[in-house]
Amino acid sequence: MNDLGHVHGLDSTGGRIFAATHQGVWALDAAQLNDGFASEKTARVGDGTQDTMGFTVARSGVMFASGHPDPANNAHQDPANLGLIESTDAARTWSTVSLAGQTDFHDITTATTGDAQVRVYGYDAARQIVRISDDSGRNWHDGATVALRKLSVNQNAPDTVLATTQTGVQISRDAGATFAPLPGTPALFLLSPIDSTAGSFVGVDTDKKIWTSVDDAATWTPKGTFQSLPGSLATVKGSSKLWILGTDSRGIVATPDDGITWTVLVGGTP
Image (tube, rainbow, N blue to C red; front, side, top):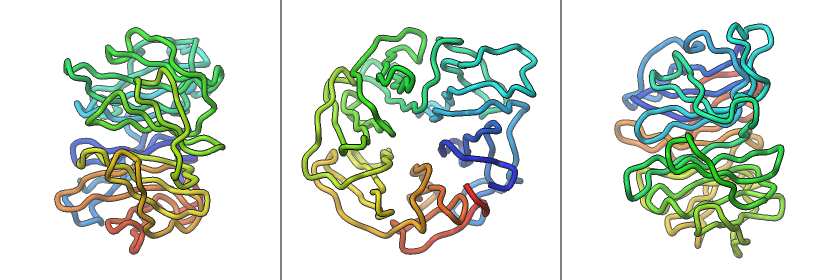
């Protein structure tokens, strides 16, 4: 997608929107949304060009990611699997947290537990297992074995985790230890929590249709559609609106009204 390359994930912090790509993490010029987002040049942040796979921003603003180093830009001789890395300065620099050389998390999501600790859920794609850390990624234990595409955690109930799979959405109510099918749910391809509203999620099904839930995924309401099946999905809060972000055949796109109208933030092939 222009110079960005393939986008693995989208998230925001401090009024800025970020895209995790094969070529590092990029800040996006989102001022055209006219909703309080920063005006800046769309550009890679810092000198990190790692293939950023799993990517998320915790409520504290700390970024967590995983993936692989860029073979052409690996001055520190980082191992092929980066494990969990973090940035406390909005992607300008990254440091290793744990599991270097061991794990490539294809998806990462976080929640704040009752004791104000950051819980990190990571999907170890090589082992097809959900791993859980209750101390910001320093120490880990294994959860359920499940072949999944996307993890999504209810920020207001950190033990509740949703996963999209080829056989439908599954739910864990025991912090990732076990998962079970969630009957009556659309065939969702991607999921993202809506952090500003308790128990709310947005999803996209295999027919590009957007769905929303406000009751911990018990029921879903159909909304608009993406132009093509998105490769990534996120929600971000502007000054006055909640935006759904994704990547489809137009590029990185945003909608404030569940897919009725769209703005292209970065054009090109995702």
